[in-house]
Amino acid sequence: MKSKILLVAILIITLVIAGCKGGNAKKNKENALCVVNGEPFTMEEYNEFIAQYQEQSQGPVTPEIKNQIVSQWISNEILYQEAKKNKVDCDNDVKRKVEILKKQIIATEYLNKVLKEKAQVTDNDILDFYNMHKKEYEVSIKISRIMTFSLDKAQEALEEINKGRSFLSVARKYSVDYNPQQGITIGPFQRGGALAQLPEIEDAAFALKSIGSVSSVVSTKYGFFVVKLVSRKKIQKPISLDSAKNTIYIKLSLNKQTNIYNTLLDSLKRNSKITLSVTP
Image 1 (cartoon, rainbow, N blue to C red):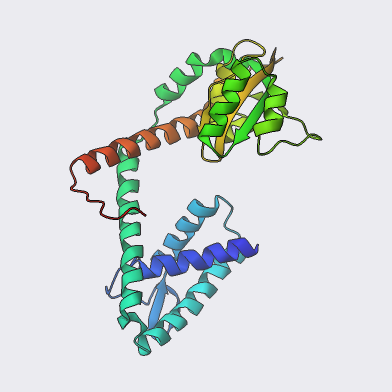
Image 2: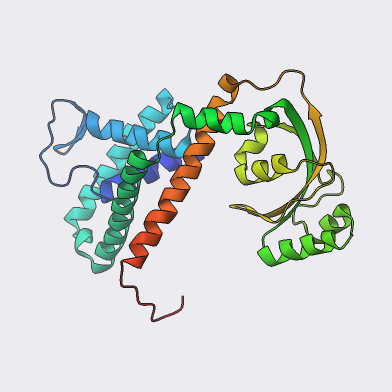
């Protein structure tokens, strides 16, 4: 619960500093949830904080969270007004920090607008993906994996496997999460199940068709993996399109967003004059 309260506090401070309150526009006190020294907290602002909380936490907005949002806004507004009295906002270091935060949020809002317009996933997209991978929705698999934090280490591990060393011995040597009590084999998994939280691993694992086959190095946000197919069995009741639709939508949406982001950024970089005078 403490982490949720902290998230509420961060969202309140971030949105207020970034100017999401509508700048200096006059706000109507008639629909205010509360007023602090003449400054109203409007329903429009409240709904913005709720939306941001849901986006960040992916959790339900409980009555406790709603009360916390109002309470945190009041606390922040009191501190903000006192800081203004003490001319903290005139400090050059504070101005610099506010400007950095402002740029980040404006850039993020622009990106969100582009993604909303271009990263649409249609029912036909979902149907095409399901039909293309239909056989994968008819089986469950078990896999063994090697995880490293270094691409070089993952490539070294794969080279040793390709030279004939056993997957287990290489895992003992290279895998950062190797545990002799738990072993290196996980599963069974079905398409769109628990393994879907790591889409790159899921794709690589289900692409392996023969028992004992090994993937190339798979890059994820958590590290680099090498995956081996341990078993592949038919399931009694194949996963239907209706059951798979939601996970397919999420997967395709993420893929489209990533591709659009990379394409947009590459285009903007090509058309920008960028000078690196100092190596970080």
